[in-house]
Image (cartoon, rainbow, N blue to C red; front, side, top):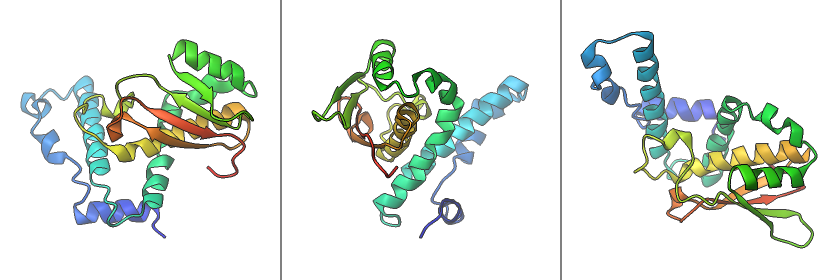
Length: 193
């Protein structure tokens, strides 16, 4: 079994992560010598985004199974969830799935429908012709389909909080996979996340 720590250690020691220090060191921030707080923050943001992008590009299915990739990347969704303060944002919707669906349709422009008559499976369509992931805002030309596992984790966490029980999410269509938009299949009352 591959743990996250073992995977990252292996990737970094083998040089597979290509963390991007060379690109950052060659950037204008280092040439100008402006190391003010703002420049340091920007420098760190560039490093973090580049490091993450390179790591995602180099996740190799020849060495990891799809299940291992999904587990590693999906678990990282907690960072985005916490950064957005989603627990507080979702608090008014706990136990009110219909209200939450209405909210995301009206405020986020998403389209939500039920796949089945028993209302156990949601089809959630972001209805946007671009990837909304903040990690790729400066890397729009790159396609990193493995990042969709993070989106699955984010959707699972979000809908589990609203529903009050575990759900399972799968990205069935995504910009990163070459599709026109991102669509999720959310299975309600699932015992596995």
